[in-house]
Length: 251
Length: 251
DNA sequence: CAAGAAAATTGGTAATACCACATTGGAGGT
DNA sequence: ACCTCCAATGTGGTATTACCAATTTTCTTG
Image (cartoon, chains in turn purple, brown, blue, orange):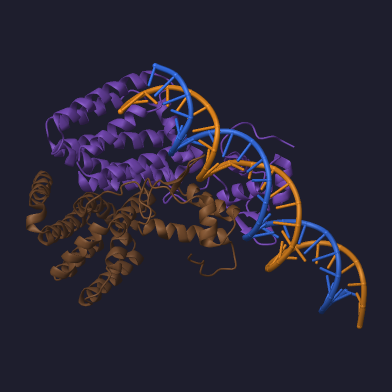
């Protein structure tokens, strides 16, 4: 039937990629059996050893399970890596950032170097430009926050915060909600980022913490604003009340 | 030469396991070339297709890189997965916990249920028993801190803190240093944990934060105590000074 | 209709052959 | 003596064929 497109190297890799795509397309749901090795060999115009190599590649990746005398069965779909913490909402994510990044900013204020301050200042300007671009990707925003995390001189802190941003990128719902919030609310972020920068420049931990908290509180507000009323009104009120309680206790 | 031990299923898996062990043993350092497929086939008494399957399994795992016409070369050693944040010290880890878990405790104080309080109380008692056991594994300690993280009702926070504990477990140096610190300093932890529990029970965020900070500051102290003077005296002073600066700013 | 046996199907492994690419070493020229 | 080039050799890449073992299906049979 269909032919293998291109690639002079490693036929089995092309075939494994093709099969992975077919898995992702839903052509073979979880639990389904793949065609026999001999059939696949004919279908793709390759030899059976090559088919076996490709299936072994999928097997090692945990995509399929091979049962002797029976066949190769779909174990999980390509997209669904079991990354720990994959099931977090945009609210949880931002709440976590509110807690962690605020403290990180305070620590960074005691550690930041002049070079890092210059870099952060450059990123603030980049964020301003990014905001004017209707199709901005928030790359500068991410870089800004990670630069502060890095200024803590603590790899564990930097990694934890970087991870939160990755979760945001890999969670479809979170990315969508953030995008909605962004289009509806563009103005204040520049000032907030500048305030954070100012506190860092002053080497004032308390001010840096407060500025970061203010910024992320604003982000949560914009998320709340972007939330459909009818849809999750209850969850919205709960998130609001939760934050209020925490904020009041730490004011 | 050597024979394959056992296993009626999947010869290539046995062979891949054998090769992985030989990689781990340092028999083939990074960059070294593995014997030719034909040689391995003879050495292990299997056919070349089977050897190819095993090598492909290693290749998919990123252990070796196959160059056409040249051979299979060791890319990385089995133990060294590139988990993000693999290179963190015990100090960084605990400092991160000091920042994150303190805030998590504050948030948890506003969210914790009576059931969770009962569970946490149970864990405090378990920690006390664990401390009397010279070969305690700190399982209860971990469970205690994760229970508090869970009481925040925020999966992102829980995951981030859980990750820090995993890093501690997977980092040999960190585990070693903690073990040294534990044997040298057993007494205060019970009181500290009880203090945290008390603050949670009182639903007092500020007190919970302070209690957690006090506890983890104590942990850092014990780590400093366990650090060999001659070895990293400079790093020790730096860590001490860093924490002091942050603590003074948040007192 | 059910239980068991036979046949067909499927993955597992081996053996062999040939091709393409890489490396190496020696022939030949400078 | 040195460098260049190319052929021989080694190595992985793939195909073909064959046979075995486990499973599944089919069919016989009580």
